Image (cartoon, rainbow, N blue to C red; front, side, top):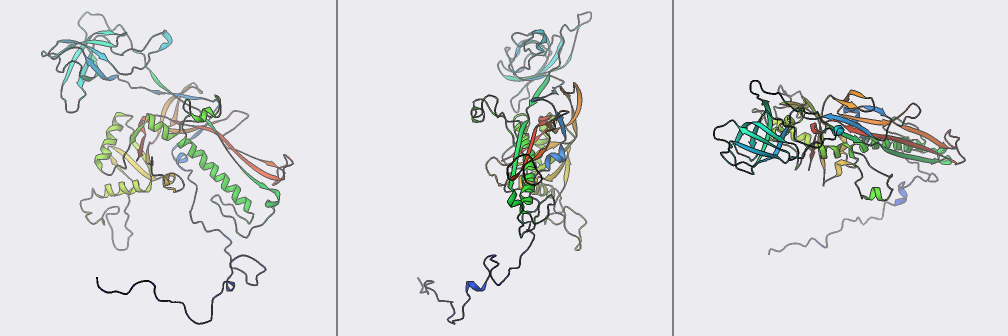
Length: 477
């Protein structure tokens, strides 16, 4: 090993002169008995910008009153019936076969005491297709008998070769028409339409700010600055306004994050049978009734093709908005830029008529592939103090269908158009609980008690209705 000078101990850089810098030469506090006065900045520096995240529901939803502890609505079911878990008792080559429907059946109209049963009828023509990937086996036939109690139907095949698949193979079945002979009786049964009934319960959200009367009379040296324009040198104004802003954020975040309290959960056990029950927030509803793209962001057109394929099987809403975090937005920009064959260096996408005097736009606001997709950054998912700081179980974005849908509103007793996302708050002729705030105490203009303080109370009671959740997509890790 070659010789070298050891790095330690090193050489000193401390000067040997006796002139020294002492702590007493500098102001280290705001002691005004000191002869040296500090230069102060009266206004706070807003280093985090606008800290409020309440914007999502205002952009895509609406608010309307409700007068009940329970909100219920009906959503249309499929027009056509398809069963995807059927098995045949027949063998390859059989001219007829009994097909058993193993799907979970929707209960029939119980007004007449009916029970669940399959919705096929004698005389209808049906297509049977094997579910296995890569299989091309299928049959068409006519239904000759239906057993409501056994959830089976008998089919006579049109093909001379009979059934093409083996006994017990899982197939899908749907009706594509009917056929009757001359002079025969007509259809003997009818099918009753079934709606899907959904419900949600409002939750009560509260907050409070308190300040003593003495502190209200104290003037600070820092001027108040808040997102809602509060000004002055009374510090309690800032704290009260920040409590208000925080509460307004809670109103939105509760509607997004809320979950119902499950049976035997701690939330119910510690508050009693009529205690905290939770509510169904948007993320919960989409996870349970919507579509989920998991494992990271879709970064290629093939990924979006799988999303589009699912949307085709749902409501096929033409316009959709992607509310996403920053990384997801960059991934979409890069995916769209890669479609430009002249952009090998990444300099010709965004604004294709670039010159040296023009700023290069490296982003996209949307695209069309089967449907229209518009994207926008969702601050809630970027904020490091909120969803932006989550690693496990992170949500990268949500796809929200644009427009409104028609549902049967039981409170109104009629069909009504509603945005896919909307908030219902408790209200009546004498009580409006959309956003309540009141002041108690004996300071700040209040004269409600002998308490030498001002207490500002906030309250709201609301629930989010997510209509047509099957049209939403949640993007998670």
